[in-house]
Length: 235
Image (tube, rainbow, N blue to C red; front, side, top):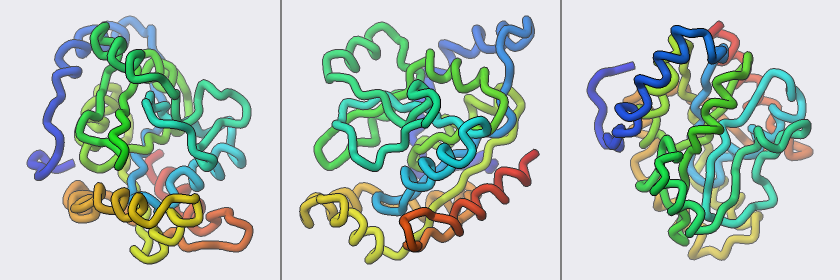
């Protein structure tokens, strides 16, 4: 990973408050380490949740989601683990609960710079980080490249491979997918505008780009094959 980054959220204070605990746990063997951390990024409509769901359905014992805590409402396409919902893509909470988590310092990473067009908030609970770190397999975090540096720093403490994978789709296709979800055109355009500069940042951070075209039956076979090839190369 390059040491100099541009446009990356540099609020990594959570590392300094928790780093001592993590190193103690590692030295004393309290925490097992996962094999690979895959940071999955892409603009709205690129098919991240669809790809995640396909991986979880086909390989439920090999993949886990890094669960994000969010104040937004569930979408029909949010990834859910078929065997254990505690390893699903999102945990939905109210604004007051999210604020409580932040005040009690049990949010390890609060993505304050990442908000939907309706102002929803996202974060990662320390407990869910601990759960995924205790998993022997591939953990996938669906986060923007703007927080890749923080995720990379966290997981590299465990001396395990971290790879960034960016789903690359034509702008027209991504917009069409958002409309298919039932978003109004204005909201779809607002979602797209939030990702301004993400692709260039992902290139700078050394992400691997994979295509994710529409496929018959809605299962992203080609993207899944490319994703698996990248992950397996990390072992």
